[in-house]
Image (tube, rainbow, N blue to C red):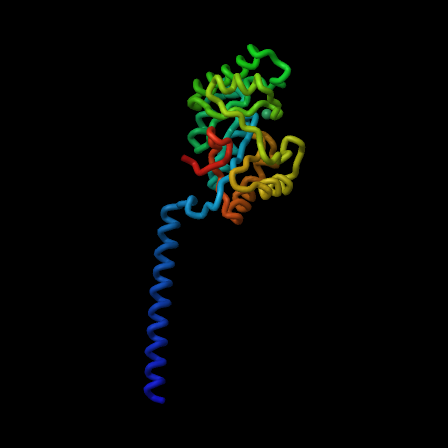
Length: 233
Ligand SMILES: [Zn+2]
């Protein structure tokens, strides 16, 4: 009986020691993770957040919100606005965003001649490069309207056409709740359409981040090779 009690006590002490060691190990891991944020470790997949039609007077607030919430996104800029606000294109790059081409004046490209399409795309590439946005690899035609001519002109400038898998409808007055719910429908590799200017989109950013984190998804870059969202590289 005595022996058994002593051995039970010894077992208890051993267990407590093991628990304390485990707790210390957990604490160390947690401290390290906090000191060096490594979101990649928690990513079971990636989605492509995209914001069209900037840069605008709303861009600075949007970039602040994205950065505060640890989100990166692809900004499909209009060339005319990039030319007018080059510092905002630089701010997009500085905030970790990917700069992409969304035509110069946002026309219905499928109704234009090949020369006009060429002008829309090439002038935007130039405006974005002049602003410090590098040489974009992604192109989204306004309204998602495309055809073989649009695609071939884009390809001539080394651009991959990116439409979207989910339309947030933020351009159509979608509520902040509805925008967050749209993000909730994204699966690994998919791309969502949002815009630079709606107040409801800006308001949705913190909840978009929470929603993605809850599902183990991270905001990724859009691969020019596959058109799918992938780990930032
Ligand atoms: Zn647009």
